[in-house]
Image: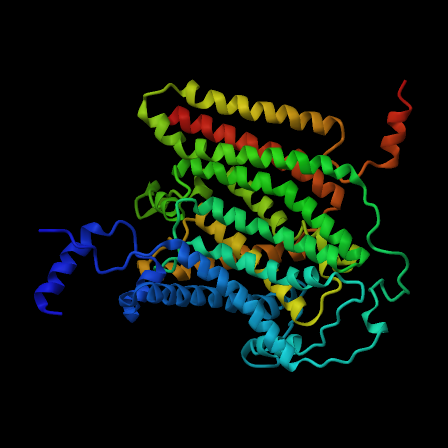
Amino acid sequence: MRFEPPNVTEMNEWIAVGMLAFVGLLIPLGMMAVSYLIRPSVPETSKRATYESGEVPTGGTRIRFNIQYYMVALLFLIFDIETVLLFPWAVVYLDAVESDAVSLAEILGPMLIFVAILLVGLAWAWRSGAVQWARSPFQVEAEADRP
Amino acid sequence: MSRGETAESLQIAGPLQVGEPLLPERISDITGLGEFGVAGELTAAFLAAFLVGNLMLAMTGVAGPWAKRKITAAFTDRIAVNRAGPAGLFIIVADAVRLLSKENIIPEDADRPAYDLAPIVVASSAMLGFAVIPMGSGVQLADPEVGLVFVFAVAGIASLGLVMAGYASANKYSMLGGLRAVAQNVAYEIPLVVTGMSVVIFAGSLQMSTIVDAQTQTLLDLGIVSIPAWYALVNPFAFVLFLVANFAEVGRNPFDTPEAPTEIVAGYQTEYSSVYFVLIYLGEFLHIFLGGAIIATIFLGGPAGPGPEQLGIVWFLIKIWGVFMLTQWLRSAVPRVRIDQLIEIGWKGLLVLSFANLVLTAVIVGLIA
Protein backbone atom coordinates (compact mmCIF):
# COMPACT_ATOMS: atom_id res chain seq x y z
CA MET A 1 0.00 0.00 0.00
CA ARG A 2 1.34 3.41 -0.98
CA PHE A 3 1.38 5.98 1.75
CA GLU A 4 -0.74 8.95 0.86
CA PRO A 5 -0.18 12.15 2.81
CA PRO A 6 -2.70 12.39 5.64
CA ASN A 7 -5.83 14.41 5.24
CA VAL A 8 -4.31 17.28 7.16
CA THR A 9 -2.78 19.69 4.67
CA GLU A 10 0.87 20.47 5.20
CA MET A 11 1.62 24.17 5.02
CA ASN A 12 4.72 26.19 5.24
CA GLU A 13 4.55 27.50 8.80
CA TRP A 14 6.23 30.79 7.92
CA ILE A 15 3.09 31.67 5.95
CA ALA A 16 1.23 31.78 9.25
CA VAL A 17 4.00 33.85 10.85
CA GLY A 18 3.81 36.29 7.96
CA MET A 19 0.05 36.41 8.32
CA LEU A 20 0.31 37.26 12.00
CA ALA A 21 2.71 40.06 11.07
CA PHE A 22 0.06 41.23 8.61
CA VAL A 23 -2.72 41.00 11.21
CA GLY A 24 -0.41 42.72 13.69
CA LEU A 25 -0.20 45.65 11.26
CA LEU A 26 -3.88 45.50 10.38
CA ILE A 27 -5.11 45.87 13.96
CA PRO A 28 -3.18 49.12 14.70
CA LEU A 29 -4.05 50.51 11.28
CA GLY A 30 -7.70 49.63 11.81
CA MET A 31 -7.72 51.35 15.20
CA MET A 32 -6.08 54.41 13.62
CA ALA A 33 -8.74 54.45 10.90
CA VAL A 34 -11.58 54.21 13.43
CA SER A 35 -10.03 56.92 15.53
CA TYR A 36 -9.57 59.14 12.45
CA LEU A 37 -13.29 58.86 11.75
CA ILE A 38 -14.56 59.68 15.23
CA ARG A 39 -12.03 62.08 16.74
CA PRO A 40 -12.40 65.86 16.62
CA SER A 41 -9.76 68.21 15.30
CA VAL A 42 -9.51 71.63 16.87
CA PRO A 43 -6.25 73.12 15.60
CA GLU A 44 -4.60 75.59 17.91
CA THR A 45 -0.91 76.44 18.02
CA SER A 46 -0.32 76.56 21.75
CA LYS A 47 -1.83 73.12 22.09
CA ARG A 48 0.90 71.65 19.94
CA ALA A 49 3.75 73.14 21.95
CA THR A 50 6.26 70.69 23.36
CA TYR A 51 5.19 69.57 26.82
CA GLU A 52 7.45 70.80 29.56
CA SER A 53 5.20 70.55 32.59
CA GLY A 54 3.21 73.60 31.54
CA GLU A 55 6.19 75.96 31.29
CA VAL A 56 7.17 77.70 28.07
CA PRO A 57 9.52 75.22 26.36
CA THR A 58 13.15 76.28 26.50
CA GLY A 59 15.96 75.13 24.23
CA GLY A 60 15.96 72.31 21.74
CA THR A 61 15.69 68.62 22.45
CA ARG A 62 18.45 67.36 20.19
CA ILE A 63 21.12 68.16 22.70
CA ARG A 64 24.43 66.43 23.20
CA PHE A 65 24.08 63.40 25.36
CA ASN A 66 26.69 61.72 27.52
CA ILE A 67 28.44 59.40 25.12
CA GLN A 68 29.88 57.23 27.86
CA TYR A 69 27.17 54.67 27.43
CA TYR A 70 28.28 53.75 23.92
CA MET A 71 30.85 51.46 25.53
CA VAL A 72 27.95 49.45 26.85
CA ALA A 73 26.43 49.29 23.38
CA LEU A 74 29.66 47.76 22.12
CA LEU A 75 29.68 45.35 25.04
CA PHE A 76 26.10 44.40 24.22
CA LEU A 77 27.00 43.67 20.60
CA ILE A 78 29.78 41.35 21.71
CA PHE A 79 27.62 39.49 24.19
CA ASP A 80 24.74 39.28 21.73
CA ILE A 81 26.93 37.66 19.11
CA GLU A 82 28.18 35.38 21.83
CA THR A 83 24.65 34.18 22.61
CA VAL A 84 24.15 33.49 18.90
CA LEU A 85 27.29 31.36 18.92
CA LEU A 86 26.32 29.60 22.15
CA PHE A 87 22.80 28.57 21.07
CA PRO A 88 23.96 25.77 18.70
CA TRP A 89 26.17 24.47 21.48
CA ALA A 90 23.24 24.43 23.92
CA VAL A 91 21.05 22.58 21.42
CA VAL A 92 23.48 19.71 20.80
CA TYR A 93 24.85 19.57 24.36
CA LEU A 94 22.59 16.90 25.85
CA ASP A 95 22.90 14.63 22.81
CA ALA A 96 26.67 15.00 22.85
CA VAL A 97 26.87 14.17 26.56
CA GLU A 98 24.66 11.10 26.16
CA SER A 99 26.40 9.80 23.04
CA ASP A 100 29.63 8.83 24.89
CA ALA A 101 31.56 9.53 21.69
CA VAL A 102 33.29 12.56 23.18
CA SER A 103 34.40 13.17 26.73
CA LEU A 104 32.69 15.72 28.93
CA ALA A 105 35.80 17.94 29.01
CA GLU A 106 35.76 18.12 25.23
CA ILE A 107 32.14 19.28 25.13
CA LEU A 108 32.29 21.60 28.10
CA GLY A 109 35.83 22.95 27.82
CA PRO A 110 35.57 25.16 24.74
CA MET A 111 32.36 26.75 26.01
CA LEU A 112 33.90 27.46 29.41
CA ILE A 113 36.93 29.07 27.79
CA PHE A 114 34.68 31.07 25.47
CA VAL A 115 32.54 32.38 28.32
CA ALA A 116 35.61 33.03 30.47
CA ILE A 117 37.21 35.24 27.79
CA LEU A 118 34.04 37.31 27.55
CA LEU A 119 33.74 37.58 31.31
CA VAL A 120 37.30 38.93 31.41
CA GLY A 121 36.09 41.60 29.02
CA LEU A 122 33.14 42.32 31.30
CA ALA A 123 35.46 42.52 34.30
CA TRP A 124 37.60 45.07 32.45
CA ALA A 125 34.54 47.13 31.52
CA TRP A 126 33.33 46.89 35.11
CA ARG A 127 36.65 48.15 36.51
CA SER A 128 36.95 50.98 34.02
CA GLY A 129 33.45 52.13 34.97
CA ALA A 130 31.90 51.55 31.55
CA VAL A 131 28.83 49.68 32.78
CA GLN A 132 27.38 52.65 34.62
CA TRP A 133 24.64 55.05 33.68
CA ALA A 134 26.88 58.03 34.46
CA ARG A 135 29.94 58.68 36.53
CA SER A 136 29.16 60.73 39.57
CA PRO A 137 31.26 63.91 39.97
CA PHE A 138 32.75 62.49 43.15
CA GLN A 139 34.10 59.53 41.28
CA VAL A 140 35.75 61.68 38.62
CA GLU A 141 37.35 63.89 41.24
CA ALA A 142 38.62 60.93 43.17
CA GLU A 143 40.28 59.57 40.06
CA ALA A 144 41.81 62.93 39.21
CA ASP A 145 43.28 63.19 42.69
CA ARG A 146 45.19 60.00 42.28
CA PRO A 147 48.96 60.46 42.23
CA MET B 1 -16.29 10.07 0.07
CA SER B 2 -17.07 6.35 0.41
CA ARG B 3 -16.79 4.45 3.64
CA GLY B 4 -13.70 2.56 2.52
CA GLU B 5 -11.79 5.72 1.78
CA THR B 6 -12.57 7.21 5.16
CA ALA B 7 -11.31 4.14 6.95
CA GLU B 8 -8.15 4.13 4.87
CA SER B 9 -7.39 7.79 5.49
CA LEU B 10 -7.98 7.27 9.20
CA GLN B 11 -5.55 4.37 9.22
CA ILE B 12 -2.87 6.39 7.52
CA ALA B 13 -3.46 9.53 9.50
CA GLY B 14 -2.37 7.79 12.71
CA PRO B 15 1.31 6.95 12.26
CA LEU B 16 2.16 9.74 9.83
CA GLN B 17 1.14 12.58 12.11
CA VAL B 18 4.33 13.44 13.91
CA GLY B 19 3.18 16.51 15.78
CA GLU B 20 -0.22 17.94 16.39
CA PRO B 21 -1.54 19.80 13.36
CA LEU B 22 -1.08 23.53 13.74
CA LEU B 23 -3.95 25.98 13.84
CA PRO B 24 -3.84 27.07 10.16
CA GLU B 25 -3.92 23.42 9.08
CA ARG B 26 -6.86 22.66 11.34
CA ILE B 27 -8.75 25.64 10.03
CA SER B 28 -8.11 24.66 6.42
CA ASP B 29 -9.40 21.18 7.27
CA ILE B 30 -12.52 22.33 9.02
CA THR B 31 -13.46 24.91 6.42
CA GLY B 32 -12.25 22.91 3.43
CA LEU B 33 -9.98 25.76 2.37
CA GLY B 34 -7.16 23.28 1.77
CA GLU B 35 -8.68 22.41 -1.60
CA PHE B 36 -8.13 25.88 -3.00
CA GLY B 37 -4.36 25.68 -3.29
CA VAL B 38 -2.20 28.64 -2.34
CA ALA B 39 -5.12 31.04 -2.00
CA GLY B 40 -6.81 28.62 0.40
CA GLU B 41 -3.61 28.25 2.43
CA LEU B 42 -3.20 31.99 2.69
CA THR B 43 -6.82 32.43 3.74
CA ALA B 44 -6.57 29.70 6.37
CA ALA B 45 -3.34 31.18 7.70
CA PHE B 46 -4.96 34.61 7.78
CA LEU B 47 -7.98 33.30 9.66
CA ALA B 48 -5.75 31.56 12.19
CA ALA B 49 -3.61 34.66 12.63
CA PHE B 50 -6.74 36.79 12.95
CA LEU B 51 -8.03 34.49 15.68
CA VAL B 52 -4.78 34.57 17.67
CA GLY B 53 -4.33 38.31 17.16
CA ASN B 54 -7.82 39.10 18.39
CA LEU B 55 -7.50 36.74 21.34
CA MET B 56 -4.48 38.73 22.44
CA LEU B 57 -6.28 42.01 21.71
CA ALA B 58 -9.20 40.87 23.86
CA MET B 59 -6.86 39.93 26.68
CA THR B 60 -5.17 43.34 26.63
CA GLY B 61 -8.64 44.87 26.50
CA VAL B 62 -9.57 43.11 29.73
CA ALA B 63 -6.17 43.70 31.33
CA GLY B 64 -5.64 47.39 30.56
CA PRO B 65 -8.82 49.28 31.38
CA TRP B 66 -10.30 46.81 33.86
CA ALA B 67 -8.04 44.22 35.52
CA LYS B 68 -5.18 46.63 36.16
CA ARG B 69 -7.50 49.09 37.91
CA LYS B 70 -9.22 46.38 39.90
CA ILE B 71 -5.97 44.80 41.06
CA THR B 72 -4.36 48.11 42.01
CA ALA B 73 -7.54 49.09 43.83
CA ALA B 74 -7.54 45.82 45.76
CA PHE B 75 -3.96 46.50 46.85
CA THR B 76 -4.75 50.02 48.00
CA ASP B 77 -8.09 49.09 49.61
CA ARG B 78 -10.35 50.81 47.08
CA ILE B 79 -13.16 49.55 44.85
CA ALA B 80 -12.26 51.03 41.43
CA VAL B 81 -14.57 50.77 38.40
CA ASN B 82 -17.93 49.26 39.36
CA ARG B 83 -20.61 51.38 37.66
CA ALA B 84 -20.99 50.07 34.10
CA GLY B 85 -21.94 46.42 33.77
CA PRO B 86 -21.11 43.50 36.09
CA ALA B 87 -18.08 44.40 38.21
CA GLY B 88 -17.58 47.42 35.97
CA LEU B 89 -16.59 45.28 33.00
CA PHE B 90 -18.28 47.57 30.45
CA ILE B 91 -15.64 50.17 31.23
CA ILE B 92 -13.61 48.37 28.55
CA VAL B 93 -16.01 49.51 25.85
CA ALA B 94 -16.35 52.97 27.35
CA ASP B 95 -12.58 53.38 27.59
CA ALA B 96 -12.01 52.17 24.04
CA VAL B 97 -14.50 54.72 22.70
CA ARG B 98 -13.18 57.45 25.00
CA LEU B 99 -9.54 56.96 24.02
CA LEU B 100 -10.12 56.52 20.30
CA SER B 101 -12.32 59.62 20.09
CA LYS B 102 -9.72 61.90 21.71
CA GLU B 103 -8.11 64.55 19.59
CA ASN B 104 -4.72 63.46 18.30
CA ILE B 105 -2.38 66.28 19.29
CA ILE B 106 0.95 66.09 17.49
CA PRO B 107 3.74 68.27 18.88
CA GLU B 108 4.96 70.90 16.44
CA ASP B 109 8.59 69.75 16.44
CA ALA B 110 7.86 66.07 15.99
CA ASP B 111 9.67 64.07 13.30
CA ARG B 112 6.60 63.00 11.43
CA PRO B 113 7.24 59.61 9.83
CA ALA B 114 9.07 58.24 12.86
CA TYR B 115 6.57 59.74 15.31
CA ASP B 116 3.69 58.03 13.51
CA LEU B 117 5.45 54.75 12.92
CA ALA B 118 6.68 54.19 16.48
CA PRO B 119 3.30 53.16 17.99
CA ILE B 120 2.74 50.70 15.14
CA VAL B 121 6.20 49.19 15.61
CA VAL B 122 5.65 48.79 19.36
CA ALA B 123 2.20 47.20 18.98
CA SER B 124 2.79 44.90 16.03
CA SER B 125 6.20 43.59 17.09
CA ALA B 126 4.71 42.43 20.38
CA MET B 127 1.87 40.75 18.52
CA LEU B 128 4.24 38.88 16.19
CA GLY B 129 5.88 37.03 19.07
CA PHE B 130 2.72 35.00 19.70
CA ALA B 131 3.13 33.24 16.34
CA VAL B 132 5.28 30.45 17.78
CA ILE B 133 3.72 30.10 21.25
CA PRO B 134 1.93 26.78 21.82
CA MET B 135 -1.23 27.82 23.64
CA GLY B 136 -2.69 24.35 24.01
CA SER B 137 -5.88 22.89 22.54
CA GLY B 138 -4.12 23.03 19.17
CA VAL B 139 -3.84 26.81 19.13
CA GLN B 140 -0.39 27.41 17.71
CA LEU B 141 0.20 29.29 14.51
CA ALA B 142 3.62 27.99 13.60
CA ASP B 143 6.21 25.72 15.14
CA PRO B 144 9.54 26.47 13.45
CA GLU B 145 12.69 24.86 14.73
CA VAL B 146 14.09 28.24 15.74
CA GLY B 147 11.01 29.04 17.86
CA LEU B 148 12.70 30.29 21.01
CA VAL B 149 15.25 32.44 19.17
CA PHE B 150 12.47 33.83 16.99
CA VAL B 151 10.42 34.93 19.96
CA PHE B 152 13.42 36.61 21.64
CA ALA B 153 14.33 38.34 18.39
CA VAL B 154 10.82 39.62 17.76
CA ALA B 155 10.39 40.80 21.34
CA GLY B 156 13.57 42.84 20.90
CA ILE B 157 12.15 44.88 18.03
CA ALA B 158 9.99 46.86 20.46
CA SER B 159 12.99 48.76 21.83
CA LEU B 160 13.47 50.18 18.33
CA GLY B 161 9.92 51.50 18.51
CA LEU B 162 10.56 53.00 21.95
CA VAL B 163 13.68 54.82 20.73
CA MET B 164 11.77 56.07 17.69
CA ALA B 165 9.01 57.35 19.95
CA GLY B 166 11.48 58.95 22.33
CA TYR B 167 13.55 60.67 19.67
CA ALA B 168 10.80 61.72 17.28
CA SER B 169 8.66 63.41 19.96
CA ALA B 170 11.23 66.22 20.28
CA ASN B 171 10.54 66.35 23.98
CA LYS B 172 13.20 66.16 26.68
CA TYR B 173 11.23 63.73 28.81
CA SER B 174 10.62 61.51 25.80
CA MET B 175 14.28 61.67 24.83
CA LEU B 176 15.37 60.59 28.32
CA GLY B 177 12.74 57.88 28.40
CA GLY B 178 13.79 56.52 25.02
CA LEU B 179 17.46 56.46 26.01
CA ARG B 180 16.62 54.80 29.30
CA ALA B 181 14.50 52.23 27.50
CA VAL B 182 17.29 51.23 25.15
CA ALA B 183 19.87 51.16 27.94
CA GLN B 184 17.59 48.92 29.96
CA ASN B 185 16.76 46.57 27.10
CA VAL B 186 20.44 46.31 26.20
CA ALA B 187 21.35 45.50 29.79
CA TYR B 188 18.70 42.84 30.34
CA GLU B 189 18.49 41.18 26.94
CA ILE B 190 21.66 39.13 27.50
CA PRO B 191 20.68 37.74 30.94
CA LEU B 192 17.26 36.89 29.52
CA VAL B 193 18.61 35.01 26.51
CA VAL B 194 21.42 33.29 28.43
CA THR B 195 18.97 32.09 31.09
CA GLY B 196 16.67 30.88 28.34
CA MET B 197 19.67 29.00 26.95
CA SER B 198 19.98 26.99 30.16
CA VAL B 199 16.51 25.62 29.39
CA VAL B 200 17.63 24.69 25.88
CA ILE B 201 20.33 22.54 27.49
CA PHE B 202 17.61 20.43 29.15
CA ALA B 203 15.31 20.26 26.16
CA GLY B 204 17.95 19.93 23.44
CA SER B 205 15.83 21.93 21.02
CA LEU B 206 14.71 25.45 20.26
CA GLN B 207 11.34 24.27 18.98
CA MET B 208 8.57 25.39 21.31
CA SER B 209 6.54 22.18 21.03
CA THR B 210 9.61 20.08 21.87
CA ILE B 211 10.39 22.23 24.89
CA VAL B 212 6.81 21.81 26.11
CA ASP B 213 6.87 18.05 25.43
CA ALA B 214 10.11 17.65 27.37
CA GLN B 215 8.38 19.11 30.42
CA THR B 216 5.68 16.45 30.51
CA GLN B 217 8.06 13.90 32.00
CA THR B 218 7.64 13.12 35.67
CA LEU B 219 10.03 14.76 38.07
CA LEU B 220 8.78 13.27 41.34
CA ASP B 221 6.14 10.61 41.92
CA LEU B 222 4.34 11.16 45.20
CA GLY B 223 1.88 8.31 44.85
CA ILE B 224 -1.35 10.19 44.18
CA VAL B 225 0.18 13.23 42.53
CA SER B 226 3.12 13.12 40.18
CA ILE B 227 4.98 16.37 39.84
CA PRO B 228 5.85 17.14 36.21
CA ALA B 229 9.37 18.18 35.22
CA TRP B 230 8.50 21.80 34.62
CA TYR B 231 11.76 23.64 34.24
CA ALA B 232 10.70 26.09 36.95
CA LEU B 233 10.91 23.12 39.34
CA VAL B 234 13.97 21.53 37.72
CA ASN B 235 15.96 24.75 37.82
CA PRO B 236 14.25 27.29 40.12
CA PHE B 237 17.34 29.52 40.08
CA ALA B 238 17.02 30.01 36.31
CA PHE B 239 13.28 30.63 36.76
CA VAL B 240 13.83 33.47 39.22
CA LEU B 241 16.57 34.99 37.04
CA PHE B 242 14.34 34.80 34.00
CA LEU B 243 11.42 36.38 35.85
CA VAL B 244 13.54 39.32 36.99
CA ALA B 245 15.15 39.80 33.57
CA ASN B 246 11.73 39.55 31.96
CA PHE B 247 10.22 42.27 34.16
CA ALA B 248 13.14 44.52 33.22
CA GLU B 249 12.83 43.64 29.56
CA VAL B 250 9.15 44.53 29.39
CA GLY B 251 9.78 47.57 31.60
CA ARG B 252 7.52 46.70 34.52
CA ASN B 253 8.00 47.52 38.17
CA PRO B 254 10.41 47.64 39.83
CA PHE B 255 12.16 48.30 36.53
CA ASP B 256 9.79 50.82 34.93
CA THR B 257 12.35 53.63 34.95
CA PRO B 258 11.93 54.42 31.20
CA GLU B 259 8.45 55.77 31.92
CA ALA B 260 8.88 56.62 35.59
CA PRO B 261 5.93 58.98 36.19
CA THR B 262 7.56 60.65 39.17
CA GLU B 263 10.74 61.51 37.28
CA ILE B 264 10.15 61.99 33.57
CA VAL B 265 6.34 62.34 33.26
CA ALA B 266 5.70 59.30 31.05
CA GLY B 267 9.03 58.81 29.32
CA TYR B 268 8.87 58.03 25.62
CA GLN B 269 5.05 58.26 25.55
CA THR B 270 4.81 61.77 27.02
CA GLU B 271 3.78 63.43 23.73
CA TYR B 272 1.45 60.69 22.54
CA SER B 273 -2.31 61.11 22.72
CA SER B 274 -5.45 59.55 21.30
CA VAL B 275 -5.01 56.39 19.23
CA TYR B 276 -1.19 56.56 19.34
CA PHE B 277 -1.31 56.42 23.11
CA VAL B 278 -3.67 53.44 22.88
CA LEU B 279 -1.27 51.67 20.53
CA ILE B 280 1.77 52.18 22.76
CA TYR B 281 -0.26 51.03 25.74
CA LEU B 282 -1.49 48.04 23.74
CA GLY B 283 2.10 47.19 22.83
CA GLU B 284 3.15 47.34 26.47
CA PHE B 285 0.39 45.03 27.61
CA LEU B 286 1.05 42.67 24.72
CA HIS B 287 4.66 42.63 25.85
CA ILE B 288 3.70 41.71 29.39
CA PHE B 289 1.59 38.87 28.02
CA LEU B 290 4.31 37.82 25.58
CA GLY B 291 6.77 37.70 28.48
CA GLY B 292 4.23 35.66 30.43
CA ALA B 293 3.76 33.37 27.45
CA ILE B 294 7.51 32.76 27.16
CA ILE B 295 7.74 32.08 30.89
CA ALA B 296 4.75 29.74 30.75
CA THR B 297 6.14 27.89 27.75
CA ILE B 298 9.73 27.34 28.80
CA PHE B 299 9.34 27.17 32.57
CA LEU B 300 5.74 26.26 33.46
CA GLY B 301 5.03 23.44 31.06
CA GLY B 302 3.12 25.54 28.53
CA PRO B 303 -0.50 24.41 28.32
CA ALA B 304 0.07 21.45 30.66
CA GLY B 305 -2.27 21.04 33.60
CA PRO B 306 -4.66 18.61 35.25
CA GLY B 307 -7.72 17.54 33.33
CA PRO B 308 -8.24 16.63 29.67
CA GLU B 309 -5.96 18.01 26.99
CA GLN B 310 -8.72 20.17 25.53
CA LEU B 311 -8.37 22.36 28.62
CA GLY B 312 -4.84 23.27 27.52
CA ILE B 313 -5.62 26.81 26.50
CA VAL B 314 -7.39 27.46 29.80
CA TRP B 315 -4.30 26.43 31.73
CA PHE B 316 -2.12 28.45 29.42
CA LEU B 317 -4.23 31.57 29.92
CA ILE B 318 -4.25 31.00 33.68
CA LYS B 319 -0.45 30.87 33.65
CA ILE B 320 0.07 34.04 31.65
CA TRP B 321 -2.56 35.83 33.72
CA GLY B 322 -0.63 34.64 36.76
CA VAL B 323 2.46 36.39 35.43
CA PHE B 324 0.35 39.47 34.73
CA MET B 325 -0.96 39.42 38.32
CA LEU B 326 2.64 39.20 39.50
CA THR B 327 3.56 42.33 37.52
CA GLN B 328 0.63 44.18 39.09
CA TRP B 329 1.54 42.91 42.52
CA LEU B 330 5.09 44.20 42.08
CA ARG B 331 3.65 47.47 40.78
CA SER B 332 1.84 47.99 44.04
CA ALA B 333 4.41 46.56 46.40
CA VAL B 334 7.96 47.23 45.19
CA PRO B 335 9.60 50.66 44.90
CA ARG B 336 11.12 51.61 41.57
CA VAL B 337 14.90 51.32 41.17
CA ARG B 338 16.91 54.33 40.01
CA ILE B 339 18.29 54.27 36.48
CA ASP B 340 21.91 53.88 37.63
CA GLN B 341 20.89 51.08 40.01
CA LEU B 342 18.98 49.49 37.15
CA ILE B 343 22.04 49.42 34.91
CA GLU B 344 24.21 48.05 37.71
CA ILE B 345 21.72 45.33 38.61
CA GLY B 346 21.68 44.30 34.96
CA TRP B 347 25.35 44.33 34.08
CA LYS B 348 26.95 43.55 37.41
CA GLY B 349 24.30 41.32 38.93
CA LEU B 350 22.02 39.51 36.53
CA LEU B 351 24.57 39.08 33.72
CA VAL B 352 27.10 37.42 36.01
CA LEU B 353 24.42 35.31 37.70
CA SER B 354 22.97 34.20 34.36
CA PHE B 355 26.37 33.01 33.15
CA ALA B 356 26.92 31.26 36.48
CA ASN B 357 23.55 29.58 35.98
CA LEU B 358 24.42 28.52 32.43
CA VAL B 359 27.81 27.07 33.36
CA LEU B 360 26.47 25.34 36.48
CA THR B 361 23.52 23.88 34.58
CA ALA B 362 25.82 22.58 31.86
CA VAL B 363 28.24 21.06 34.37
CA ILE B 364 25.51 19.43 36.48
CA VAL B 365 23.66 18.08 33.42
CA GLY B 366 26.97 16.77 32.09
CA LEU B 367 27.86 15.04 35.35
CA ILE B 368 24.40 13.47 35.86
CA ALA B 369 23.89 12.32 32.29
